Image (cartoon, rainbow, N blue to C red; front, top):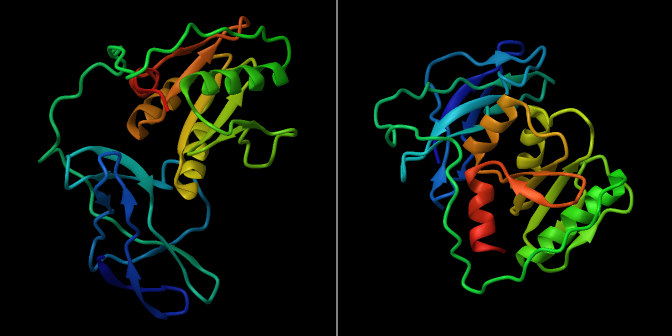
Length: 235
């Protein structure tokens, strides 16, 4: 792991900062490249754009958004550690369409999905849980009351959020679900009744997070390639 010296500009304390390592979807450990010699900046206010940084996997060349490295100084100052910008050199290749349906490759064909009608927000959670069970997930459990984490369904190796509001799911919901899944070392899936904002859809594609939309019949439909792949492979 890479370590760089970081000095707090407030109290002048020196730190040895070790860059965080995250797992790329290909399985290779991935970390932001720190910018040696550049001063760390105190964080006085947060924006979602500043809290994320593009990181390229050295193994497969994939570019994803990861949390921007930060350091908490004992003086109370939170520092944003500078990172080296990712250039186009060495990119994995041209970017294709964001959603190309994949052929069904499940080793054991599943029976037809039997949906449940959605009349309430609780019904939407039940429909998502039913669908995950159909996909082959085990120990599917619905939250009785929505927790602060906004995780509505849990299963073995997976968490899911169900947005039953009448407005498109926003970028922050995608990022929060992905972070919760990352912290728990499980997969994440997002269901929405009203679709997704364009930037939320784009971020989910970059994070390989499956997105589904549901109509009032309770039938989820995939809206990106990770969702298509999940349907193809199952749990």
